[in-house]
Amino acid sequence: MRILLSTYGSRGDVEPMGGLGARLQALGVEVVVCAPPDEEFAAVLDRAGLPLKPAFSSVRQWVTKALADRTVVDLPRRAAEIVAAQFAAIKEAARGCHLILAAGLFPSTAAARSVAEQMGIHYVYATFCPIWLPSEHHRPHAFPGYPLTPHTADNRVLWDMNVQTMNAMFGIGFNAHRASIGLPAVDNVRDHVLTTNPWLISDPVLSPWQPTDLCDALQTGACILPDDRPLPGDLLSFLDAGSAPVYVGFGSMPMQTAREAAMAAIGAIRAQGRRAIVLRGWADVALIDDRDDCFTVGDVNQQALFPRMAAVVHHGGAGTTTTAARAGAPQVVVPQMADQPYWAGRVAELGIGIAHDGPVPSSGSLSAALEVALAQEISADAAKVARTIRTDGSAVAAKLLLKTLRAEA
Image (cartoon, rainbow, N blue to C red):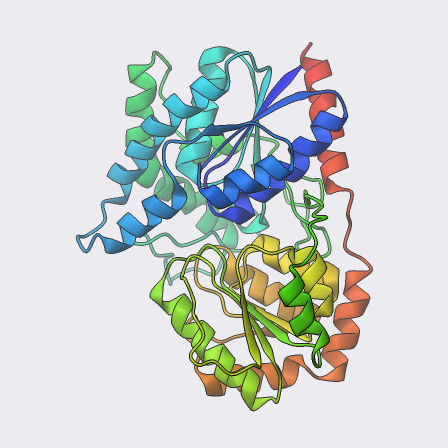
């Protein structure tokens, strides 16, 4: 049996595929991953022992180019370009496969859906956050240029309207591409791509799925790739030289605001009398001086590092939030985009950290947030929640995929 895991997005979209793929391989399944060929992502999949079939573009190059483009963005046109380009990449990766599990940006999952139809193989849609699935328990995500109507608070009505939004953004390009490859048009692109039984690959404590008749989702738990890499010697020396520091990292966010947020965080951490560990990340964050109370890191084993942190300041990606929660580290989340406000809200609701108000922090606002996050009550709750985070999501998802394949056979 051969399975393709397809994704396009940030590291938080790629690393769970590594966790799931490694578990599938341990069960004797041949696995291929179609993902962005960024060096960092390739290293993750190599650590999992998984072959990488490149997506249409590096995410870092694509995002950097998009941020540099000052013209008005035509989202439907750009989405149509991604669908066509990803279709070619995914089709090449899917040769000989019996099933495609697709996650990541919607145009990429839409392309995977068409590949599966054209090749006559099974397709599973997966997401790492519940906000992308229809439910009366939350509002749909508002896309640029397609704001939610302020005249209704009824989530069911908003999700009905979301069908039209998704058709406007993706439907024309999606159906034009389907026509070009001999597939029939669809009148509800959202539900066609999500299917009637989407998978939610996230932890049920951090992001519980509440039953709804709008969507029959299956929650597996988070797919975590174990990391046994040792921490570098100079980092261990820094950790051992003083009290537990505060980690600051904004991951694969190549934006100026991430660099500014990190600088504000250093000031806030020093105001609390703490040391800092700063992730360079895609924003290429550098220290503001040469004082010995700060240390910069590149790609590092967060599973080993976070348990030694007094707190973790980050952007609210699904992966970082889950890793910090597993480690029992208090969190300060500065959400920037997409599902990050959701994760910030969940951290606050669980009492394991603070959600910063807005994406642009100051030293003052972060200092106030850190003061709360470093309180004994938050630390106690973070340690308590850490013991409830499941670690079997990869095993659950892998067994379900095998069950699906056998049912198809």
